[in-house]
Picture 1 (tube, rainbow, N blue to C red):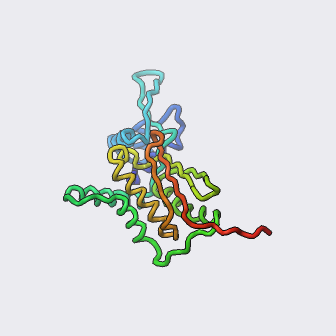
Picture 2 (cartoon, rainbow, N blue to C red):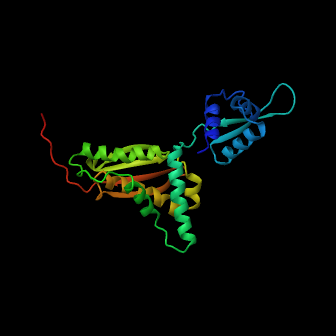
Picture 3 (cartoon, rainbow, N blue to C red):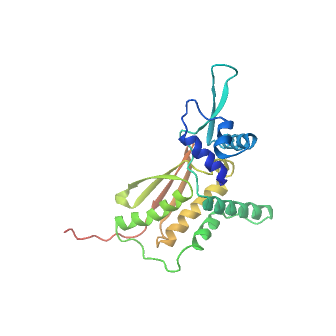
Length: 228
């Protein structure tokens, strides 16, 4: 989905009326593509689970194959995030092929460290400040294509992030140790960059077929604030 053409195709399908639906020739005409090229992109998106197909019977002739945007499609990561993740995966698998032990989590942490400010802020001193720190990780996860849902426990000291619509779902199922390890490193690296290196980060993959859960718990001592 890093392809601008496929992103344009998906946007076209999302805006189209599902009945009668959109055929390959409709996509080709709308985007100025050859119908074979349009069908190629559509079928690749079907294989990825982003687009579904259906048959529409017209007044005459054989049923017409149409393409529909998945009613609950995986969130699409930005092209920059897709490129970065591809680079991390390529590096991890190349290291494995060369006989070098893989540390996907460290790769994810290093990616964040290379893009963080040199000055690390102090750890949070209140539940609100802690949630603000976690918000940095939420922003990163949304950039990478997730749909985080947040809830708190233990008086705000633990934040549970349910991560749905993983944009790397197929890869995560095939190589959970690598893909989930990179994501765990991304979260831990982000928390360290915002001054919460001591936070505990647990990532539980595949809580459901399409979601995982990250639990972040602060080790900081919250100070009491005076009530006005």
